[in-house]
Length: 355
Image 1 (spheres, rainbow, N blue to C red):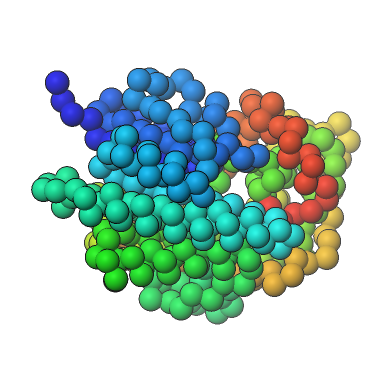
Image 2: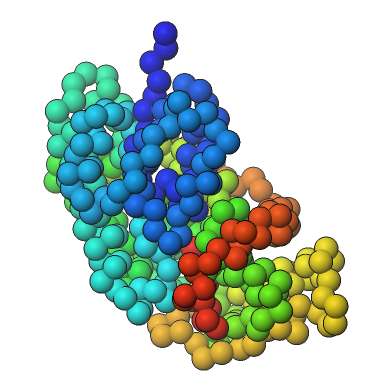
């Protein structure tokens, strides 16, 4: 009987995490332990339809150190991929304490107890063990020069409480490698899009606003630029880094699809006009420009040369194909699109410009 490869995933019922879990479960030789507190943006149904004999959900918070320690002792994972985080910029502006607790203290717990677990290991399992910390391009701050992109040597200059909390965790991961030789690798991805994303984020929110015939608020002039990557590509990149990345390094995982926020909205509106037209007018008519967000970063742009050269990875899903499949999925899953708990926050805000 073959021994299964065990993965401990945090935040595995979230947007990126659930995609990762689904992909790992496609291989019957994998066993996944998922720690997720099932917050407003999580959905246990995003894992359904897979062989659950290879999957265990621990419905708890990584801020509970005992939960983390027990999970490590009970399941003895070969690898850890840490994704659990609060990730909404506007929420971080309104309630930064939640982001400090989840993103910094939670990451500290994961690093500290995983280090203790790794230190007690022996032989080949210890040699092959890796801890992957999944972060964001927002830690680099904003870039104006259209001829430049952030690479892995760019300084960390976060501008929002969310970005600062993620940047703090990036630095904790680096410190645990430098100080304790803990085998950690960091990935920084650009804006993710795809299925099962919570409808407070830009793409599903725009679809929702269109279907409800509500105004689509856009911050400022809508010319802020983001690089978009399909979540499937990001997950493939994360696993490629797990398999081939160098310990102590960081890797930028970008989609090479830089578009303004207004362009993204226009793409969605135009496609909806084709497949589900309004009774009167075009969806673009619903756009409304609103007061800009505090410290709103102008442009995110990632160089993926390191991923290409070292990992032999690059994104493969064309944006035009990916966005159409994404829109179709939300139309087929309106129960998730109109998930009731997010109504508490939506209003007319568009802090949905980030992952």
